[in-house]
Each structure stands twice: as C-alpha cells, then as structure tokens.
Length: 148
Image 1 (tube, rainbow, N blue to C red):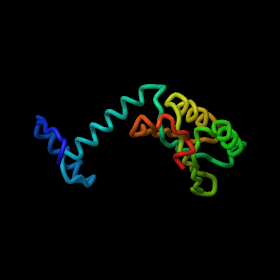
Image 2: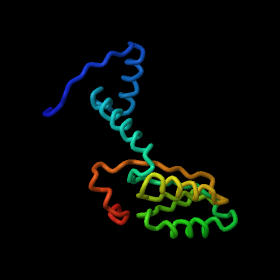
Image 3: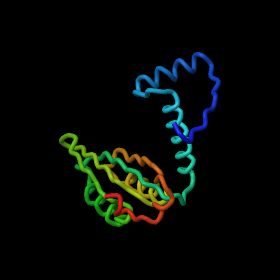
C-alpha cells in the first residue's frame, strides 16, 4: 500500500474481541479497513454539524395515504422544494401505507427544514433524513439535477 501511514492502537481485550466479532459479521477482511471506515464516518458526522455545508442524501417517508390530503400535501411540498429533489421512489407497502424515498441535495439547514416540513404533514408516520457529504469540494457548485 503506497502512501499509507501505519499507527498503533491500544485496546482492552474485551473491546478488541467485540470489535473483531462486529467486523466478521459485517464482512470486513481487516481491522485497518474497518478503522478507516469508522474514521471517515466520524469526519462526515462533523460536517453534518455545519448548517451551510452542501450535502447529498435521502429523505425516507412512511405515510398513510388515506389520511386527509396527505398525498397532495406531500406533492405540493416537494414541488415547492423541487430544486432540492433529484428523484423519488414510491413503494406501496400495504392497503394504506406507502414509502417514498427522495434523493436530495442542498445545504444541511435547507434539507433539515425540508425533512421537518414533510414530517409535520398529517398522515406522515415517519420522515428520516440520512446525509452523506459529497467527496470533493467541487461538488458544491453542482446542482441537484447532476445527481439523477
């Protein structure tokens, strides 16, 4: 492996054993690979604290389509924020419930407000915002249509 710095880590035996069991269940082939992923996740979470950070992610909605005018309100809200929505996936779960997944991009603040607005609609049972920061700074200038 070129361009890699090796480090040493001291862990209690019980913690290391639990870590190894977790790695095996997730299919990791090495501790280093898992530690790199943990570090990347920790750094990404730091970016999620900056409300002006450009982000991409998903908003997953679960709703009862028979409650009031939930479908119309969801559609209207998504159209009002169309610049944040790249695409949607709609799944019929059963007779009454639907799941919708929105691929979104924008500042963290805007996406949190969008998810909260969707959650406040009567009939929405759950709205979950899941974020991932773009890998490079040049993506800050790319609009949501580039994520289709």
